[in-house]
Amino acid sequence: MKKLFFLLATTGLLAGCAGGKSPVGLALISNVKGPISATDHTVTSKKGASCAHNLLGIVASGDASIDSAKKKAGITKVSSVDYKTTGIFPFYGKTCVNVKGE
Image (cartoon, rainbow, N blue to C red; front, side, top):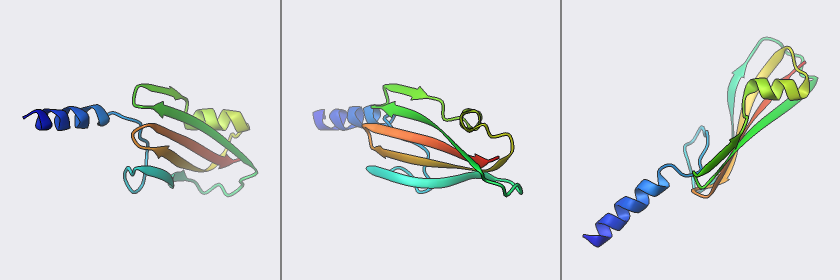
């Protein structure tokens, strides 16, 4: 009974731990990229990135918004938006949104 309780408690604690967006699901070690959107605008003279971090599912911070990435690079016309997620589950996760445009 004690082993079952320990297993359930551990699973419950890890369920909200550091993770991020991934096209293939969460893994013990992640380093994946994926698409968010694309437009017909083909000029990509500028690139902007914006990131958010998660530590142990306890502390999450950052602004991984498209708007933030656009502002950092001075982009007014978006060509494409992608993301990159890196991390070591369940300890640390980082997701960055990458915007290209002019």
